[in-house]
Image (cartoon, rainbow, N blue to C red; front, side, top):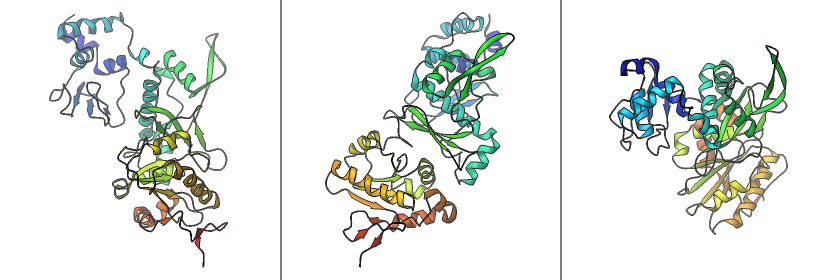
Length: 371
């Protein structure tokens, strides 16, 4: 089999699928040839090539077709790569991605990428994000349309992994062509999803927010919830801005003036400051202030005080605790929709001390000052 025939029968997409690699909605991915926290590899499907824009990459400066890409993946000679291409075409070798999907970090990364790629094709998801003022082209947000395990995507390795982590739930049986097949219900269907990341910045779990139900159950976490949103705070963090909800944190992440000066971390509600949050904050040796941006209601105000009292004795002396005087009935996202980024920036600038001796909490109101 000559090179032109190999190229006609084996596309770059085939090679990507073999290794379990998946580009995002912008046709970018973390380059597999060097340490790459921010996607620096661009894929050009029409050309059948990929290019890494990082100067730290051994492939930098050269577009790679399917053969070149495989050669670098296997770290082999061109001749050896051609032989492997022939084996892939003939089906002699099993896809590597089946092994990769047995690794939880690789599985979660793959599924979250699928969810992210679903956003541009989902009008309900885009409408909901517009209603909440969230820019999916800037933020890492996915949408679970419930189709990720069907059709061409159907793969037993993928399905087993999704069952293990709780994204698919066995639910009865289907009968097709007189064959009884396992059926599944889908966890978080028609929900936006946000990645919860571990200390290695891997997708450890996911949070789901319903786009079709704002009245009853609307928040979902995968079983054995782990990971933080948007991730573990950077070690050099000086000012940590804590939110009550993930959508509030996502809202703040869109404001350059805020992310330039503060690290954002979401708790998981008024009873959702977990050990993982606490331990990650304890490691911040340069921390000098924790700012609470919780809802303007009684439960939000009580949670601020409770969390501050939990955290204060675990941190070095001198760390300041402050809070935003969120108007009654408002949260970060609703306030942003009314007053845009300038309103939140003003609230930050006017934040007040949490443990000021003259501050008391009055039921049903914002914190008030004693006479």
